[in-house]
Image (cartoon, rainbow, N blue to C red; front, side, top):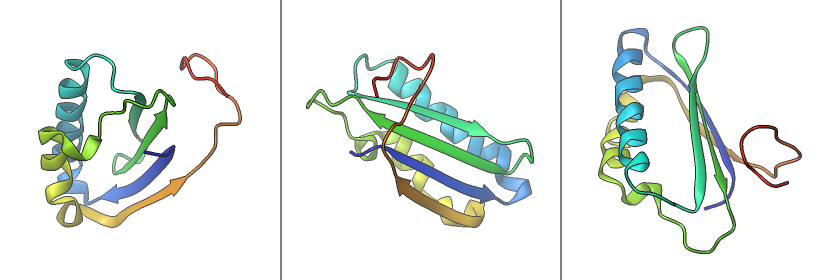
Length: 103
């Protein structure tokens, strides 16, 4: 899994549901131990925009987000929850602070 940033906008009436689904993904991940990647998500100030960031640790043994039941539930109806669909863009870390990441 490469480093990826994903951004999308939910329908206003589905934003809380989306956040709850994202929180379930983190609950599952937090119970797993080392996954080989870092993952964060933010709900932006407008209340409907979300940004997800996945950063590989380069360890070789990486869990696939797509295999997690909570992530499958999150992505199952993402199109129906969104006004603007998810757009994923790969990237290379230029610098970081406080995330425990190496550049």
